[in-house]
Each structure stands twice: as C-alpha cells, then as structure tokens.
Length: 176
Image 1 (cartoon, rainbow, N blue to C red):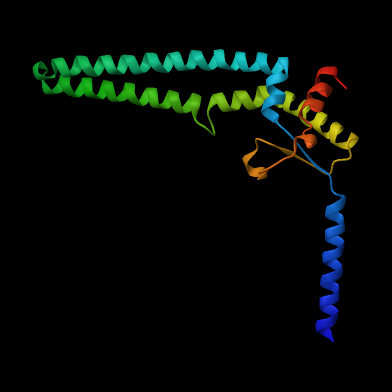
Image 2 (cartoon, rainbow, N blue to C red):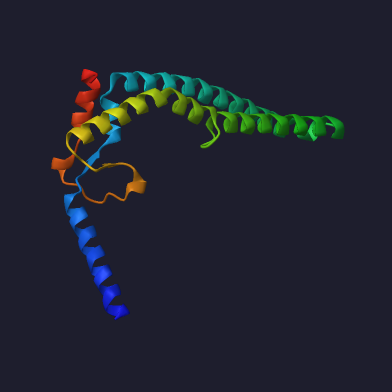
C-alpha cells in the first residue's frame, strides 16, 4: 500500500514538474555583442586599454633594464672581485623581484589593479545592462535568460528567435 501511495506521489510530482517546464519561457543574450554595441562601453574599453598599455610599457622597460644588466654582468663578471660580483647579483635579483612584484600588482588575474579597475569602471554599465535584460525579459514574459557566452550556463544550443540581445541593446540606447 505504501509503495502504491509513494508511486502515486512521484507520478503527480513528475506531471506537475513536466507541466511547469512546458510553461517556462527561456531566452538568451550575447553580452559581448551588447557591450560591443554600447558607445560608453567602447569608450571605457579604450580608456582601460590605454591605462594598461602604460603599465605594460613600464613592465617592458623593467624587463629591458634587467636584461641589459644581466648582459653587462655576464661580460664583466670575470673581472669583478667577489664583493662586487655579489653586489651586482643582489642588484639584479632585486630588479627581477621588483619587476615580478610590479607585474603581480598590476596584472594578477584576481588581485591585480587591471582587474579591479575593470570591475570598478564596468560596474555601472553592467548594472544598466542587467536592468535592461530584466525589463526585456519581463515584457516578453521570459522566466530565464542565459548569457550565450557565459561558460557556466551550459547553453549548448539556442534558437535565434529567442535571442534578446538586440532588444536589450535597443532598450539601452533609448534609455528606457
């Protein structure tokens, strides 16, 4: 008897889940396209690229200085006394460490200034995009909207008729 009741409950649950899934509306957007189409995102991307270019140039300068120091040391090391040799090696190690620290400080994938600056500058744009996605989804009565580029979404196929990308772009450009 318990087995029959349990089977009936599972069957009713499966039917209700199945009917709920049939009513769910799912759509997707391409966030890369949205950001590429927004003038303020393009301007911000250029601003970030110029800041990062300055940092990359400084890192290249440090690397070049280190390389030249190593080459100079290799040419002169046979003529240096042990104290001068040790001092030069220490100086080169310090320079190498300074370059590593600078690279970490600016370009670390989690804590680097480049990542933090990008997150800080893009936050207002991302908020606007999310609000526009929400409005478009509500207008279209969509229950779920995935980002086509978000690798965690596992969106393996999407029919283009459910692509809300350009509706979101229009919403953002008109400011509604």
